[in-house]
Amino acid sequence: MSKRLPLTRIVAQLSPTIPFVGPETLERRLGRPFDVRVGANESAFGISSKAKEAMAAAVEQLCWYNDPENFDLRTALSARHHVALDEICVAAGIDDLLGLVVRIFVEPGDPVVSAQGSYPTFAFHVSGFGGRAEGVPYRDDRVDLDGMLAKVKETGAHLVYIANPDNPMGTWHEADELNRFVQALPADCIALVDEAYADFAPTAAIGPMDASADRRLIRTRTFSKAHGMAGARIGYAAAHADLVAELEKVRNHFGVNRVAQAGALASLADEPFIRGVVAAVDEGRADYTRMARDLGLTTVASATNFVCFDMGSSERAVTTLHALQQRGVFVRMPSSPPQNRCIRVTVGLPQDRRRFETILKEVLAK
Image (tube, rainbow, N blue to C red; front, side, top):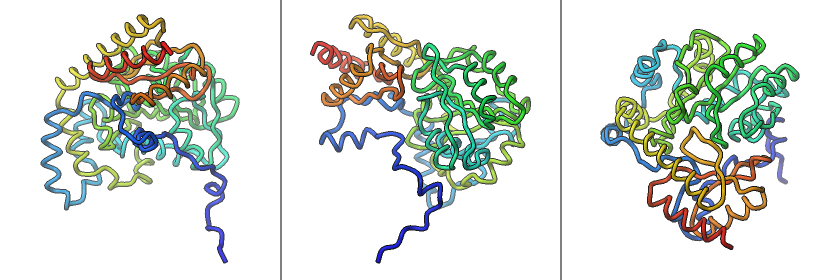
């Protein structure tokens, strides 16, 4: 006689959830690999040669455990951002950090505010810890800061999440606007600001780190984008030392492997490489804008390594996305209206962009 699993009440009530359908899953369904992979906002420009050397050397020591304190990397990050060592927390990518933050601030049933349709992994963590997601619609394809503030006050939320620059739209707010938003929050509300795309953003959008200034602010960064280390899974948060101490209580101290730590440390020091990637992405975004104009489309202004092509309607966006996938091109699209009128395309190498343009033109012609 079968018995029910002794699940927690929270998990038992969850629906099966897959935050992202990976390109590998789609390839298995299609029965062939994608020719052009421009859907996951990965870097098309590889990793730093210095990072590659450091990671190869670290492989020789994989029989040893990694440093659970991430000391060398945290030291370099604290020097880079002019913050104290105990104001940096390193974890297995921003996705890991989002889960840690939700875990320490959200009780079952608690409201949590974010933009409706923003990065879905955050909402995945909120549900997983029993929180209640409160979404605020975008305004003109940007996170509505006034609407977010109103929702926080209406619901009494203790946590609000903002991606700046935003995913999936690529739009952004200037640092002064964001600072005013944080200052206007209730004293018992934490602002979690996801800066995964900070390397590609205008200077005015990303203010200097000042982790000790406000205990309500947590800022996260990643090595997955400009540094090209998405598969290594490593990111970090900068926050007041009191906040970091709470994160350290629940962090998986062996969660960031030795190879990832070595690669991130070396890549952080290779500033010419990062500048080259940022320049190549700038060029690619301009190329996509030109491409859309030539095809009778428009794009949403982006401060990230991807661009949203406005297809005019969700029906046309879905049809276009599926047709592109059938022709070997992997792209994604925002999930919530009215942003789901777009397809989202990562900046690929020049040859990827040429192939994408050719196939998109054929799809639109049909």
